[in-house]
Length: 330
Image (cartoon, rainbow, N blue to C red; front, side, top):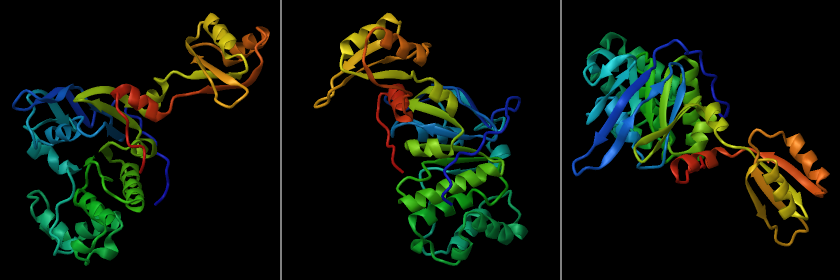
């Protein structure tokens, strides 16, 4: 359970979104706007990372999607069914984990799931035992089925919570910070489980403030900033939004910067390297050819000791979108 590659997105060009919203807004008493006119479009079969710093409106959005909170304005739909009016028609097709698991500590994992299942009026009691066993097996807890919940590790508790959402066949799973507070091993277990669920054809909508979450498991991403959705699309598309920079290591960085500017490269800057014999000149590459830039530097008599083209990291892109740093650990 340690693979790190994200699942491939299915072709969903003609499919209706698994989650959609239009102008979804939540304003609390006192005037605070927690979610500000967001338009979500989560493709079926995707692993959609709902990313943003803590307090950016992710959990409030999820609560509105599930009918746990009412929007001030706007609308939302799950699997094409309007929420919250269609909750009874669609929620049995949706599994969810919001704001952490809640189980009885003195009951076993299996008994806790039995209580969850009994509360579902659409579930068949005759198949409960088999479905509970199947859900526990799917999350790797079958051997711990008779173990009391209070003796579960944090990772096991989180996997049991996900199992509660898998007691019935689900087309959509919504997870709010599923690795929050977990140790590295528990985090790896939950991420591997998410990839497995997605590989089985279920759409997964996972909120997170961890960049590693997005890089390792997500095919699509939505980025929140103070209640607003500032980016939405496939993860490769997000990477393409960053401008590559060319960096020249030379003993005459000022002259190199002038050449870069003359070639039309924007934001030419000089960085002195303390204690080194060469400094750096850098600029945004834009549409220029790296080979042409290097040739022009040489023709201008610039002694090029190093030449590199670098793309911005995912962290740089998110900081640029949100104005805040992200937790890149996990």
